[in-house]
Each structure stands twice: as structure tokens, then as C-alpha cells.
Length: 201
Image 1 (cartoon, rainbow, N blue to C red):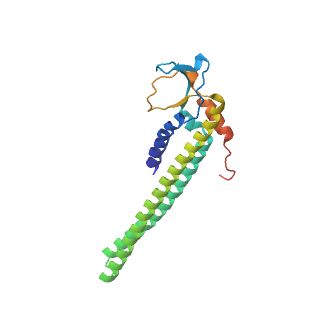
Image 2: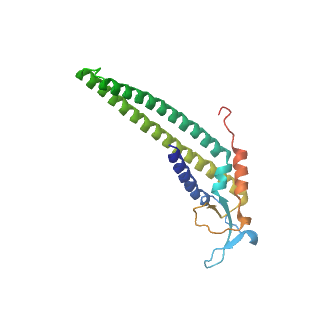
Image 3: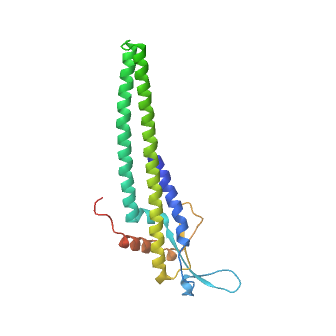
């Protein structure tokens, strides 16, 4: 489950990449230090900025709280499964011991074996159910993260007027960007200022 969470968190980071090009920015001309030419006929100017998604995710309090909550849920699920598995293992060993010592009639042994098989199936079903619940929770968290950042960027960009806000991650196509165009800390500060954590974590 830990590996699954790592993979899902990686996917979440990649999913966030698409967010930053969805701002409703004003395409007005701005100071040339923050402008880039479009390269099409009739030169237009664009105000561009980028956000480092890895840094954003590591410093956004809302996302960190969600991750902390998910870690607790995963630990609880793991503890539940371990407890049930330990109980099943003890029963299976006891059955095997009694079987070897001829403590069962044939009919009784078949009944006990059927009971253990049913318990094993229930354990497998529980494991699948808990894994599915965690996956669904991760997907819901990813959507909440996306909505949170998207709604903030729309408000943020009303004053800033960026034509394009792009993302930069370890796996992105952005090979180089002038740090002057990096607005990551502004976005983090704005998101954290707006975030109101639940009092009962």
C-alpha cells in the first residue's frame, strides 16, 4: 500500500501540471521585462510565469494535511489487515497441528477446512475493499487539490494579468526558465493564507 500511495502521489503531481495553463488571464501588453513575443504575424506580447509543482506540493499546507490524513488511514488499514491475518494464520496452524495428530474426524476436518477457506476469502475481500477505499480517497484528494489551486489561480490572475502560467516539474518539458519568472512562492503564500485547516485533525 505504501508503494501504491507513492505511485498515486507521483500521478497527482503530474496531474497538477495541466492546471497552470487554465488561468483566465488578461492578454494585455505589459512591461517588456516580463514579456515574450508570440512569433506569429503581428507581434503580440504575453506575460508569462511558471510554478515549480514539486515545491508547491511540498509546501502547500492543505496538501500536506491531506497526505498526513491518508498516511493515518493507510496505517489503520494495515493494522486491521495485519491483525486479521495474524488471527487467520494462528487458526490455520492450529488446524494443521490437529490434523496431523488425527484430532478430527474426516467430516469435522472438511468442515474446519471449509471454514478456514471462507475466512481466507473474507480476508482477501477486506484487503481489496480497503485498497479500493484508499485509492478512491486519493483520487478525491487529487480533485480537491486541483480545484483548490485552479480557483486560487483564477482569483490571483485577475490582478496579475498573466497570459500563461506554466508548470515546472522534474519530468516536465521545461528545460530552462529564468528564475525571474518563478511565482511559486507567491502561489504557495496565497494558497496557505486562504487555507483554513480543520481544527479537529
